[in-house]
Image 1: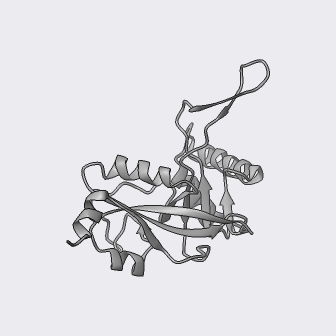
Image 2: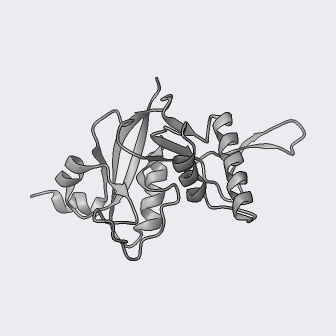
Image 3: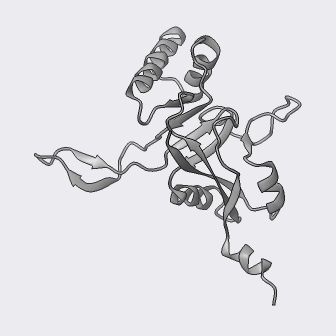
Length: 195
């Protein structure tokens, strides 16, 4: 067992008690009645509860990127990173290879050169009976890596900076601690203080 901190970034609507009571919050393109939400992008890891793994700075990055003109809050909980129900594309090479083989199969069936992540994940969930996972952990990185100061002999290879690891939980079963707000914008904190 390895209990790991995770963070969810939300728009600050100043409904803090409701957030802690009802969180975490599910990302979906549909309303509970099945109708499509307008203006919503397809969740890139499929529908689920999205969290940033380990580093609160990644949750802040998301808050500043997505809610740049609005306030945001960050909530915290934990999960077991060694759970057998975690499909881990970051630290489990076998699972990574399985995912890529599945992507190749889907691309071949569709006669396309590439397929999107949610299409492959949806295929796994629907077509592979052994896929009984409750969450997926991914490191989506840009075409260029941020380098660390560590290089390997010969200077042609380097150790990349691993950041913005994201986890999508398909349900709440792997979450291990209460869901609590750990960050509010300074404006919000100042407004809450009384003289």
